Structures are given as C-alpha cells and as structure tokens.
Length: 321
Image (cartoon, rainbow, N blue to C red):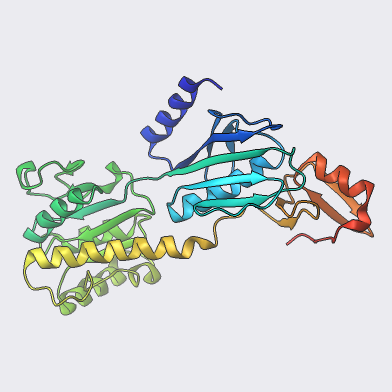
C-alpha cells in the first residue's frame, strides 16, 4: 500500500470525526510477510484496511487495536514463536506463526471530547475558556450572546437548534441558561444522544424544570432521570469560575472512568480459543474450522488447522463462547 493512500484514508476519517486505529510494522525478523513501513487502519467494528502481515498477525493486531480504541492508549505489540517478555511490549507467543518476529506499533486516533455549552452566563463563558485550555472541542448555543463573549470556540450558535451540530456519545452538554429558556434548552439537550447532560440550577429550580418536562415534553422519564443537577463535582464551589472548574472536573472524571472500564473491550462476535496457538477466534467469520467428536474447532489460520488435523490428540478443544 502506498504511503500517500494511507495518509489520504486517515485524513478522510479525521475530517469525518470518526475514531480509528493506525498500526505500523516497526521491526521484523524473517521469515515473515510483514515488513517495516507496512501500515493498516483498523475500524471500531474490527475491519482492517491496509497490510501488516497475514496469518495470526491480523487477529492479534485487531484485538489490540480494539483495546486501544477503548482505553485510548498506544502500545507496541510483538508477535513471535517464543515468549520473550520485555517491559513496554505486549508479547504474543504464537507457535503457528511463520517463525519470524513482528513488532507492530498501534495507536488510537480518537475524537476530541466535545463540550456543548447552552447559555451565555459567566459560568458558560468561563467553561468555554477552560474547555479550550484542555484542548477539547467547544460549541456554544446561546441566544442573545455575541461571539466576543466566546472567543475561539469551534462552533457558535445564536439559537438552541442542536440539529446544526454533531452530537455523539463523546459530547458533554452543559445547560447554563440560568433563567433564559431553561425548559427549551434542557429539552433540546436530552433529545440528543449525549451521554452527559448537566443542568446548572438550584435544586428547587431543577426539580421544577424537570417536572415540567415530564408533563409536557414527551421525553422518557428514564432520560430525564439521567440529567445531572447539581452539575459538577462537590468542591464547595462558590464563584462562577469555581463552578466552571467543578463541571470540567466532573467531565474529566467521567472520561477517565470510561477508560478504566474499557478492559472489557468490544468483541467481534462469538469467540473460541484456537487450540494450536491460543488465539481468540471469531467463530462467525473464520474460514478455518474442523469437526472433532461432534464439536466444531475453530482456527485463526490455515497453518493451525493443518497442525490440528494432522495430530488432533495433541490439543485441548475449546468450544465457542
């Protein structure tokens, strides 16, 4: 694959705001099909575009790429026929491998966290500045505001129509209208797919607004129950600046918790263990399988299947999960 094609594909995904992972071969010891400079892009659904070697290399790279998407961390992966643990390297021992060693650097390319601020209050203005300071994408929807109140934000709207924005699971919406269209702003916010919606108001005011929405908006009660109010961490904030800091701290904390819980990264389907090399195999997509004592046995590559078929008694069978 030509390097310019790789750059073009990556640029297209970046322009769309889609997360992906890059995998680059950085070292090899033959015999092996992957060579330094070989590159691939791995998508969140496990599809791979490009080339980093065949056989067991691709399932390993896809597995680690999905982990990287989940936890946001890059890693250096080594695939070799003999275990050689080394600090900073994720080691895979694969007896079915071609006999060579392959080192692949895997790096996630994630969307910037997106803070969507609704309202023009002093807290809103401070939160916009703080969001930019930590390199988040910042959008503002604030009727009656002018752009000078929100310098250098990525998107500035003078109405509350959120259909003009791309709102995803990585969008954090903070309603800071503070008496200027509270119900409309909060209703617009909860109708999006954002996982985080916070409403800055007193407990009494928040209860009244949410009760009004339950009666009149048609929004599911379960969704309204997800609204965070009071917003932010309880740090005894008093000034607008301190309240803005508490809200940003809560967003950072939530993002960190998501990364920690990402150990259970997405799987591609039903899985079984390859009895030859120990690799986790996607039962629904693998081409390599054999029947043994009435059960199907699944393999990551033709080499593992051949080894099993020639001496099946040497291997313990794992059924699909």
